[in-house]
Amino acid sequence: MDVDKIRQDFPMLRGIKMQGKPLIYFDNAATSLKPQCVLDAILDYYRNFNANSHRGDYDIAHHVDVLFEETREKIAGFINANANEIVFTANTSMGLNMVAYGLMPKIKEGDEILLSEAEHASNLLPWFKVAEEKKAIIRYIPLTKEGRLTVENLKKSLSPRTKIVSLAHVSNVLGYILDVKSFAKEIHKTQALFVVDGAQSVPHMKIDVQDLDCDFLCFSGHKMLAPTGIGVLYGKYDLLCDMEPLMSGGGMNTHFNMCGKVGLQNPPLRFEAGTPNIEGVVGFYAAIDYLNAIGMENIDKRERALKKYAIQELQQCENVILYNKESESGIVTFNIKGVFSQDAGSYFNSKGICVRTGLHCAKILTDFLKTDGTVRASFAFYNTEAEIDTFVEACRNGGNFLDAFFDDK
Amino acid sequence: MRFSMTNEMMREIIMDHYGNPRNKKETDNSEYQTIFMDSVSCIDKIYIQALVKNDVLIDVLWHGVGCAISTASTSIMTELLKGKTTKQAQYILDQYLKMIHEEPFDESVLDEAIVFMNTSRQPARIKCATIGWNGMEKILNGNKKDR
Ligand SMILES: Cc1ncc(COP(=O)(O)O)c(C=O)c1O
Image 1 (cartoon, rainbow over the protein chains, first blue to last red):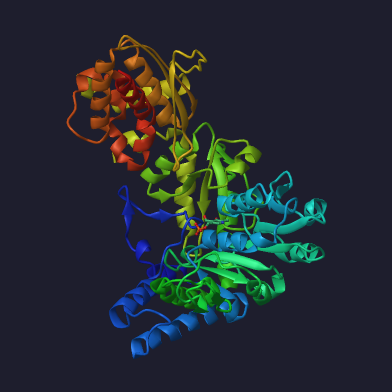
Image 2: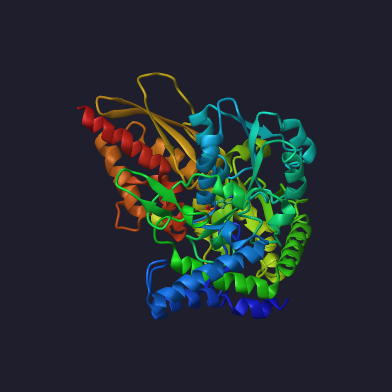
C-alpha cells in the first residue's frame, strides 16, 4: 500500500492545519476523512444530473435510478449480500432503530433482549424503549476482565426467553472484535435473532454476511469515506419481509385508499419512505469503489499494524495508562496519568492532533473501566507511523497539558 | 495590573485550584439553592449551591466531577463571589463572560479569574471555563424572579 500516494487523495491531508500545526486526524472511529473522488461524485450529481429518484420518466431521473440501484448492488457485493437485502438508512443509529421498532410487535412481556455493557448508546437506547413498551427484560452478557465477549459467557446468558441479541461487531471504546460467526451459530440454536452493530467493523475489515450468518447488520457511510447522512441496514430477506417499517410515506407503498388501507412495497423499498439521500448514495458508490481498489484485507492489515506500532511506542511512556493493549482493531483507549481526559483533549488539539475524549457514547462502560473518561485515538489506513511518533511524543509531555492555553506558539 | 501576571503564574493558579478546589462541599441545608449543570458534549457534572440572604451571597459551594478547567474556574468563582451582593456578583459574572468571549471587560473585579483569559485559544473548552459561572447566573436570575 502506497500511503503517500493515498494521502494525496484526501484534501484534508494535503496541508490542512489546526492550531498552526499540520493536522493529525486520529478520530476515525467518529468519522472518516473523505477522498476527492467522493467529493467529486457528490458535486457531479448536483451539477450534471440533479433529479429525484423513482419519480421521473426523463433521462437524468433515469440515470439517478440506475445509479441508485447500482450502488445497492455494489454495497451488497461489498458485504456478500443480495441487493434486495440492502436498505438505505441515514446512519447506524437509524438502522438499529428500524430493527428495534420493526421487531417490536414480535416481542412479548417477559421476553429477553441480550446486550453488553460495551455497546454504543445507539445499540442500547432503542432496546430500552422496546423493553419499556413491551415489558421485556434487558440483560447484559458479562464481559471478561479485559472487556471481551466470549461464546462461553453468551451461552450462560442465552435463555429460552431470549428473543434478540444485539451486539457491536467491534466495540467503539475498546476495539475488540466479536466472533460474530461463532455467536451466530450459538444464537441460532435458539429462537433468538442476532442484530450486529457494524459501525466500527464494516469500514475496517472484509465482511461476508453469509459466512457470518448474522440476521441484521447496520453501518454508517460516514465512517467509511462516504458522506454523512447515508447508512445501510442489511437484513436477511425473509426477515425484512416479516418486519414493519418504522416510517411510512411516498415510495414505500404499492397502493393506498382513503379508508387507510395501504399496500406495502417489498423490501428494501418498504423501508425507504420519502426522497432518499441521493448525494449520499452517489458518494457511497465512489467510496466503495475507492475501498475496493485498495482492498479491505489490505486496509485491515495496515490498521492493525498501526495499532500495534502505537501500542509498542506508548508502552514506553510511563505516564500513559492503556486500556486495550490486546485489542485487534485500530482503536487505542488510554489516559495520561493525572490528566482529566478532556484536558488531554485540548492539549492534543494544541498539537494539531484530533482525538476523542470522554465516554464515547458508551456511558455504561465507564463503570467497567473505572475512570471518569478516556482518550481515544483511532487510526485509518491513511495514517502514518510518523504521525504516531508525533502523537507519542505529545503523550510523553502530556503532564504539561496547560500548554494548550499558555504555550507561546 | 493583572495583565502583568506571567503565564507561569497563571498555570500555577489553575493547577492550585484543580489540586485543591475551594468551597468544594455538598450541603443538604434546604436554605441553599442548588443548580445542576451538565453537558451533552462533555462529561463535566457540576452542582452549584448558594445561600442568598437579603441580596447577599452568604455562601457559595460546589461539588461534582470536572476537568482542570471547569474545576479551577468554578473554584475561583466561588471564592470571588462569596460575600458579594447579587448585584456585584452579576457584574463580575458579566465581566468574566466578556473576557471569555474576547470582548472588552473590566479586569479590576476578576482577580484570579483572569487566568482564563486564554480560553478562546481552545474554543472547544469555553463550556468548561463557564459551566460553573453559567450555573451561578441561573441562581442569580432565578433569584430576581422570586422578588
Ligand atoms: C459502535 C457504534 N455504534 C453505533 C454508532 C452510531 O453511528 P451513527 O452516529 O453513524 O449512527 C457508532 C458511532 O459512533 C459506533 O461507534
